[in-house]
Image 1 (cartoon, one colour):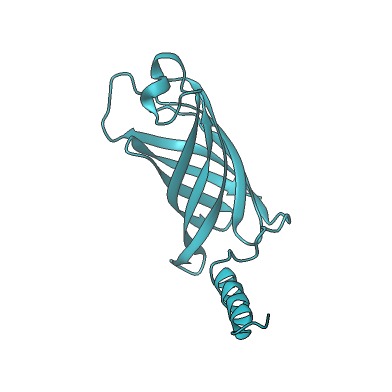
Image 2 (spheres, helix red, strand yellow):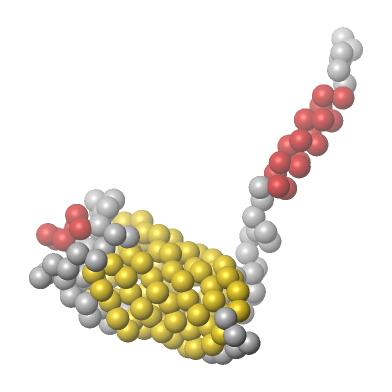
Length: 168
């Protein structure tokens, strides 16, 4: 039986192809090539609603591997707000926001991953932590001045942290 509208298949294929390319991520999957490594530590932590149980001494240490397309993967170890050792394993992306001066660049960063370390009586202090491993997403804004980098990270509605580090 002949098809009444043979052009529909071609039109549907064109539409699917155009839609897929319009919504595809640039350079996906990310290049495995390493552009730089960033090592950071926490300088200052403040909770928005301080509690006597909170500590503001996180002693955070993190390492991030960045590729030329601004994708990143990292791991951080720190003491959480209740002085428990905690790990954050994550991936994310940097977004350039512009040049402040010739040597200083402004950028945003968004990371997402898994957080492990809120245990015992503090297990329910973060959402979705039923098995003591919870999803997390952390936005930040930062500057880069040569090899020096600094970030202001907001962790949910709980607080914020200033970090600084060196890129290699």
